[in-house]
Image (cartoon, rainbow, N blue to C red; front, side):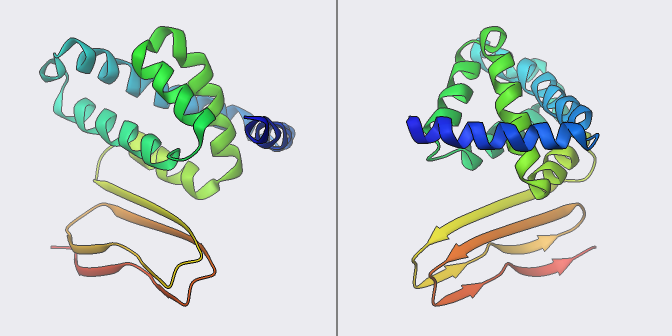
Length: 172
């Protein structure tokens, strides 16, 4: 837990730098937008009434929640904050918004991907691989991308071979 707090302290300083550079409002608004999208999805899923959401709201909420679980896997503090939100969205949304704004401040690629996901429209695929000391690291294989965007981020150290994404057909 102590390491998490040290990490948060250093990231908070980076958020402060973003604030001084005029980016704080966009980080805060993007994090708030994510919470606005997630809250009805999580509430309706808990009630077993996901069908009451529109198709776009259902897909966006599902994608956003899945993205956060995947991104924060292995980060106990972030996972706990997300778990708290899923259990009680009203009680957990302030902490989730703060955690998300901090994460967005340190990762501009994630910020762009999250913004695109929230804006909706064309399908979005986002994959991030963080790998240490592996013989071979392979990106995703996308058979067909008709429309939308695919973002692949690989943070690899100590690998003998790194292979990026393989995309078959792009466009119609």
